[in-house]
Image (cartoon, rainbow, N blue to C red; front, side, top):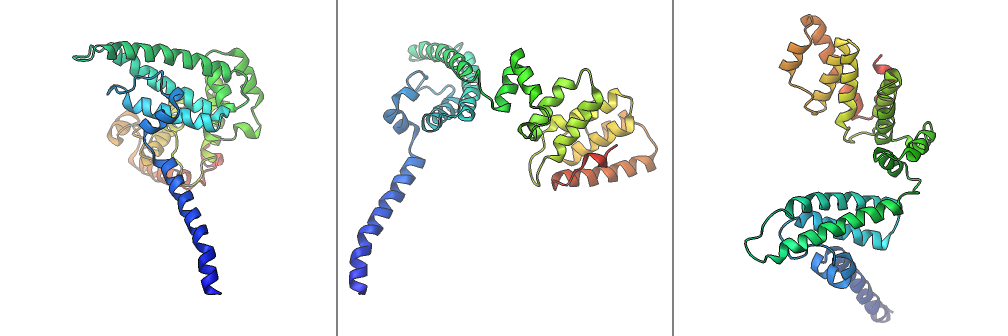
Length: 273
């Protein structure tokens, strides 16, 4: 029985080993081999050029992700990586190579292709219902996207810190109270251990300062420092917001408690009135 089991199991083990090896190869193969197998992903880039290597490699692999999974979310990542690549190429295209003069031509060609890719991706994402993409289109001046984004207010689609921050940017010029509410709600949505966007704390500190509430401005600034956001050194904040030592010590203690609540995902808007 054991002998028959061993004979039967050997081909299965071999098959499993081959599948595992294939999976490892798929995950760890080089960019060169990826380009060889999928030349359309790389043909319009400045291959074999030290300039923009990191941005180029990141973009090529993201294009491969889109090839396998052409969702709006993946295409949006490709768009962002293409912008990064474009910015690098705009600088690199001005550099005169000491050797291989054709490299400058290749960089210019790759830059023009990056512009075309950005235009194409923007067109493909023009009707996306992904909230992050709608916000991006709004930030690019698309008024239709602004209307779409505002219609999502109060729905689960915007119940993330990033989207609450994005929504707050719309109200910041005409409704400070609502802006503060949205920013504090953004803090409520963080889970334990998640990195908090400094813009949220900075905005809360700025609004408090503009409103003349120096104690609240100092509190948010110290919360930012407790979360290692480098809002401003304590010495500078002390000079900027003079107050009695006893009052400052109480605010410092409160800032530490609130920063801990945010870091643990336990913050509630009612904690700061």
